[in-house]
Figure 1 (cartoon, chains in turn orange, red):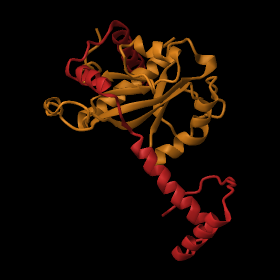
Figure 2: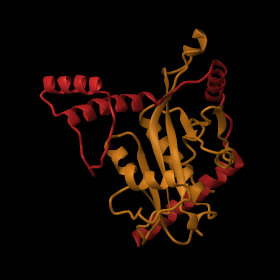
Figure 3: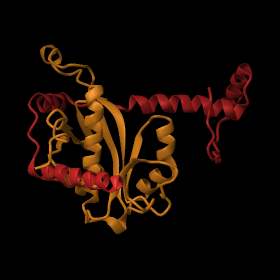
Length: 173
Length: 100
């Protein structure tokens, strides 16, 4: 499966997104009509996965900046925190084209999102990733990788980043 | 305020005579056209809302759980570990190939 070389890139004009169909119209429309606009406005950055020789989008995800408010914590706990509110990265969307599903591309996209977030986290404090989950299947997918429930309504999952930081640098075993 | 127009589309809104009158007067005061005034005011509000929505508010218990997750993060589980190794290989392949 990994024989064809894959590329992870920030969404650009050259990418073919017209044919993208993940089965969820809202996610198709976002990629086609709003993703680039949001990048210009700095509301969110979209990254895509494609094969080396094709510009067709296999899958994409969108990262936004965000923060978690901790105003309700006791003073002595707040003091232990480096910043307030706590800066986090938000994985707002992740989708794979219907024809390409079941090949592990979703996993690669999630890992790329974590990689980019941990890179960014080295320069500016980012303490974790929060995922907006739309339905139960998606929740199961993320929980397999250790994401835990942060809130039920809206359904948000969280994973802290500090344990991940060096993981991407370590030599392969 | 600068409004960037990418592809224009229509937005029809019904308002009361009174609201329209107020909007018209305000637009005139700004030396603006009515529609540009309405759009730019609404957009400003929309962007403000969107940037505020980046802050996640949790219940007291949820905040406590969040704090605990930060303080004592669980280890990277087996699935994520494998995913990271696989990801590194994919990236490695790409790098090697582009060197040739």
